[in-house]
Amino acid sequence: MQDILAMIYFWLKAGHIIFVIFWMAGLFMLPRLFVYHQEAPEGSEEAARFVDRERKLLKIILLPSIIVVWILGLALTMSIGAWTQGWFHAKLLFVLLLSGYHGYLAGYAKKLARGERRLSGKQLRLLNEVPGVAVAIIVILAIVKPF
View 1 (cartoon, helix red, strand yellow):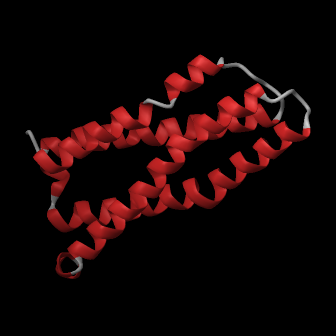
View 2 (cartoon, one colour):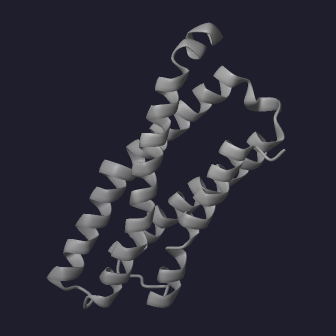
């Protein structure tokens, strides 16, 4: 199995990076949609359109992307034997945190759809910075492998 993974390593890596880009695009876009959603009058047709947009973004882009990212990431890990390397453990921690952030956003989308607006526009704008910081750390860990 490991021989097969080694032969297709670059294809796995390319696919992983492509789906990470899709995932990150969605994670950047969703909190921005939340900001606009919260600025729309409650119960309005505009608010209903944002509920639909958020649902589609989660189901059509974010969910498939995170699944493929995890599958290809684990296949890459097996192909290079990264389980014992310190940089990988740190990267895995940040990917788990980013996955949790994804789950938090999905939960917040459901609350917004029910009319619950618990965060301010400023808080949502700050949340929009989370994936950028996380992905910068993840890329440095994966490329530089500092430890």
